[in-house]
Image (cartoon, rainbow, N blue to C red; front, side, top):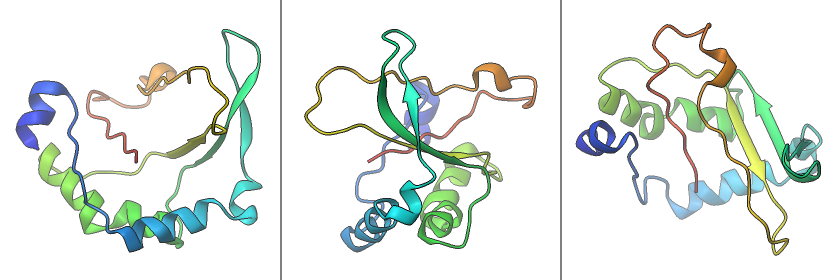
Amino acid sequence: MIRDFNDLGYFLVRGILSPEELSKIKQTVETESFLRHAFWALNPHTGTTECRKVMWRHPGNDVTGMLARSEKIAGTCEKVLGGEVYHYHTKLMTKAARTGGKHVWHQDYGGLKWLISDYTDSIVTGP
């Protein structure tokens, strides 16, 4: 993992979460109470709304917050990065199935570079 991160800028850990853990996360993020916080993201190239986005800054006490603080996730990231990790924000983006087209991804710190003195290490997780 450490070599992959240093050489490639990312690492992939297959199976870090069990099917049961993934099921709990899926159940949580698909509830109406969770999705009511979503907003539609505008594609700057087409002017259309193509995905829903939910963002938050502080890991809560639900399954998503526990995941962010877990040894499996935070502990693994600390081992790879060689120090303590901090949660800046979480962003979940969803796109309707079978709608075609591409999804516009932009995962660096962009305009937030003024906030972070060393913004070169960012962990992006996905399914």
